[in-house]
Image (tube, rainbow, N blue to C red; front, side, top):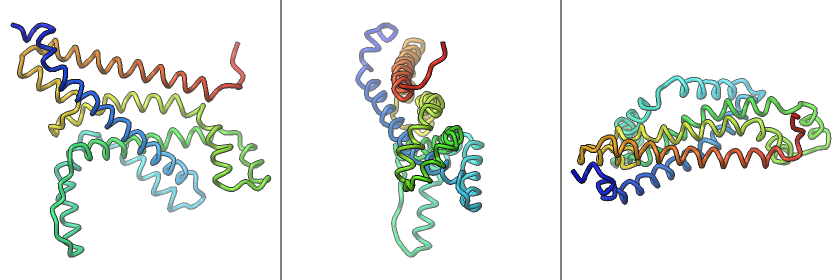
Amino acid sequence: MTAMTPEGLGEWAGPILSGALTTVEIAVLAYAIGLLLGLLGAGAKLSPWAPLRGLATAYSTLIRAVPELLLILLLYYAGGQALDALLAYLGMAGAVQITGFATAVGVLAFVQGAYMTEVFRGAILAIPRGQLEAASAFGFSRWARFHRIVLPGMLPNALPGMSNLWLILIKDTALISVIGFNELFFTIQQAAASSRAYFLFYAAAGVIYLLMTLSSTALFARLERYVRRGQPTEA
């Protein structure tokens, strides 16, 4: 059968490439939003204000405890109904439809933010306290202290965890296939089912995910070398 040959794979090359690009788009957007949520969460957990610490702790604890797949199903199938009920309560008419793309980015970003919160919190705590005290003594504003002291000091410690979370995120995008959204894994499933060339297409998916992982690992390794420039290294 031609479907069992590379020619059969070639017929699906366009859709698979499109699915791979969609996967990258979801991952990049979710990661960027997760970074912002993580910074806010880490700042809240380190805040002297107890209610803010409690809110951040509840967020990071609850989100990390619930499977991503459950959150995806809840948002996609129940999120629109919840928003409709809220609009009706506010006296506003309208039917809200949450797309698969919005579900993917929203859920994965929220999950990434919970894990990033702990990564950034640990990285900030690893900064020598004397540096922060010196910045305060010199009258640095909060923003100046953040981008001159906190950010350069935390990045070398945070990057390994950030790299791991990015690699996990790439693989977690495959969970979106359960709602029928045309990302990489869902497209591969369609191709394999229509051609019955299961090994060929699932092996191709493995190769694509592997290429994404290897290129990401190389990029983060280069970034870590850059942020660690000037630091003493072990012999």
